[in-house]
Amino acid sequence: MKKILVFCTILCLFISNNLQAQSDALMTSILSEVKDSVAKEVLAKPGTFRYQIIYTQINRDKYGVPNFTNYKLNVDPASYFNPASMVKMPLAFLSLEKLNELNISDIDKFTTMHFDSSYQRQVAMVTDSTSENRNPSIAHFIKRAFLISENDPYNRMYQFIGQQQINKNLIDKGYSSTRITRQFMGFTEDQNRHTNGIRFLDRDDRVILHLSPQYNKDSFQFGKPILIGEAHINSKNELIKAPFDFTRHNHISLEDMQKMLQAVIFPSSVPLKYRFNMKEEDRLFLLKYLSQYPSETDFPNYDPSVFYDSYVKFFFLDSTHKMPENIRVFNKVGWAYGFLTDVSYILDTLHNIDYMLSATVYVNSDGVVNDSKYDEETVGWPFLKQIGTAFYQYELSRDRKYKPFLKNQVKHYDVKNKNDSRIPIKVVDN
Image (cartoon, helix red, strand yellow):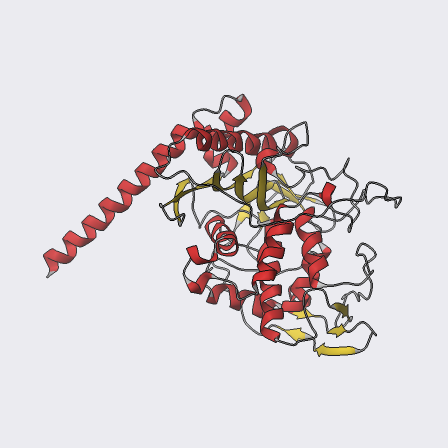
């Protein structure tokens, strides 16, 4: 029996190492096509730039059923990166799930919400000037969070779900790397544990449902300290010659983010445990605003010269600021503290190709964290664009046993009113 166990262990290690070698070999081969000197330097220094890349190949059988194969390079769940705005994605998913599970006939994603100020430093909200009816709602929060990655919608969805349920629900679904501890409001740990009271109102401003303020009594397991950088700027704007402590910050692994997005775009491709319990119309609403452009959107009325179509599409972000007409990217990005992350599903209906690509990179050459001086424009965004191009070109060239005919699950996108005379939004907190 012992010999059998030893043999099985050795066999499993051999298979695992062999699969990893195949994964690394394909990724290295694809990325060898990158000629840009900046991107090549990043690829040559994984320790410095802390990059991780997941490429998910999608192949369909003769019936059109997709099969997913993940290829990884430098992916390590123990290697921390700050997810920044990436946390808005699971909160949008959980918000629609919570609405569905409330199961109240007069409440849906478009229902007006009022937020009370129930604890220290909390901010009430009873209007939203960027929405068509000037009322806050989950639907409008999701649009703002996805279209250009605004911060306050994240805070409001955090307050709706509650810190305790955010973490419990995601961990129960199998996203075990999740640790979402804070809003984007500069709160203390105690203040982040408290969330606002919320009222849902009907069209006559009558309260349909009142949700009491929540408090998270659960403890977090932070593990060993996460210290990054050579120095940092503290809350008093002082330079401290010591690493920045990310130990108690938000955290989600790149693998979990990729799986979350796949669970919403292709629910049947993941085990039931990983899926989000929402109505089909809500899932399609998510897909629409994961892939719609600011230039197609009336509410909010974003200035397209500032918030251009590729603004949050890092794998296609170049000096033209345009997106190819035949491509839709369903994605979420995040950028903060020198970390840039993009988790994407790319669909090209002209060439009938689709795949997933996720990557994170750290660009902070001066080693000082929280000084707002990062190498995003000179290194980070060019790097993500270069690897995005490499994988897209590979997808164009690779053979498929069964060539699919692909359609966008989103049937219609919004059309911006060209005669709109309102002053467009040029500045947001994101």
